View (spheres, helix red, strand yellow):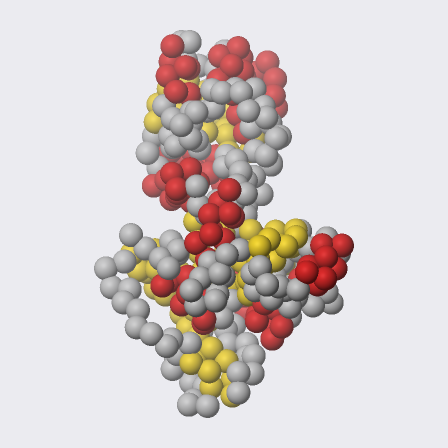
Length: 355
């Protein structure tokens, strides 16, 4: 018998295909093996569709009997939008199940494995670091009911974010643009600010391998200043604006009529949108992974409120000079966090995970 990790890593590759498309469910991959040969594979496509185990078993047909199942996450044992996977596993005659992570969902936590063992199916938890990392955001969402927030910021060597007089400027190379699109792809939703929309008019979609993918987009827009001719209006899968109570009601009605969702958020004492309420609300929408892409003010606000789990600071090998827009107006100390440095093309990435 081959090392179970080999098959579990194959299952992980399948799960990665649909990461960012399954929320509120986690992305899961499964591989069926018989006589040390993979006989079928499956992955969960989206919420409400068959789970990865079901896809793999159905694909194998009668050959599934006596096979070993390798799955990234503990099989479910409760009725949701689909029947429990444990029932089909037992009914099919699967010999053993190897899974790479327990499911932190209280409806499943260790119960899936226990149900299978009580039904005569051997179960083995194989700790695979890559799989544990893969479910970091899902575990965070289950535990806290808030999304795992990854925030990105691009700066020059001298800590600038824009050109003279705030003029938007493209700082990083093509390699980091692809890197950004990959993060967008595997996120359940994206968040930006009205200032980014007004100054940059971004598309905020996913453009990889000649494919364009739309994502749900949230915009911090206190006064509902969103222009209906903005490109995001066309490129978002679903567009939601967060605004304060005093925002113009006629404007709100006009936006709603154009399929823009508008949600009132309480103001802080400083008159800004309450980011904590926004993050709570996004979590209640079933979003595990939230990608935040905006300017320096938004970056600092999220860090100050300790709402960030993962920060990516792109550093371009350029010096923009004193006339350019600075990004940091207050001190931040990232020492003691889990920090990695990557080089992508000519640019550097400071990759910070907060402990």
